[in-house]
Image (cartoon, rainbow, N blue to C red; front, side, top):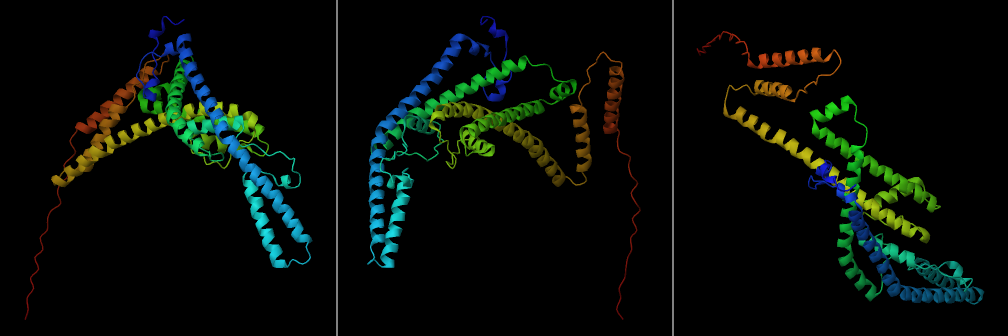
Length: 392
């Protein structure tokens, strides 16, 4: 299956900025193993980083939570004793209540539930669990950085710097490799799709730019389908999320904006979320690059059309008096009409010959209109009026 692959050309690679060469070989088992190996290496690096982050941050997290837990329980009993004291005035009681509210806010911000003060045996939620730590390492490698979990120890922050310096280039390499694989799959799939209707094919042949714009539009549509699928999954995973919340989270994540206002909370889905984000980043980066190149081509064509031509006509109108720039502009527009007029290919129906004759007649009429000199208009007679003014 992989011996005669050189006869297949990949035309859509020109849109992705890669050479126009044969890429069918990427679907061979040997090439597929290289792609899978690169992806597995990134997964192992992410998992290893998560384990290191947990080993560095988990003891500090437990010590900090134990401190806030004991402090909350102690201040709760102090407040109860002050309330039961009849000799305490209202000002002292209010000050103690405000201090307890501050202690309670610090405890809840560190993941301790207020129920701990009533029941000391209540377990506290782990911030640096294994799945949470792996998910955090994936946000570091993809430069998303939600900010809901951050390293607080010296060694944790130092490891984060080194880990990011090594892992971010690896992640970008994997994302670029996945983008090439996706482009290859799209290219091979497009060759097996049914042909476009005649009207669309004629427009594409007459204007290749519109064909590239159509590809970019389809790519953006596919990206929105991928985001909508992720939004549906997050709506099922997170009980308090709506479909709009899931779509907003997916878009903010895939574009690496990463506000952190919405973050998944179910630890058992963190690995699937990491895989979804990594594949989505490859899709998003590829599609954004495709749209960016389309913008660049449109801007270059606009500059080529409006810049030199408009500047030349302006200089011509300023330099020579009596030059009819509007007439020159009309002639140029007629010439462009003839050049860009699509040729009608002969078909099996009986109307093709008639259309060809009509097209030739239209071209001859335009050429005759351009070459025929404009009729000279007779200048109106000049009447000279002389007024004499005299004073008496």
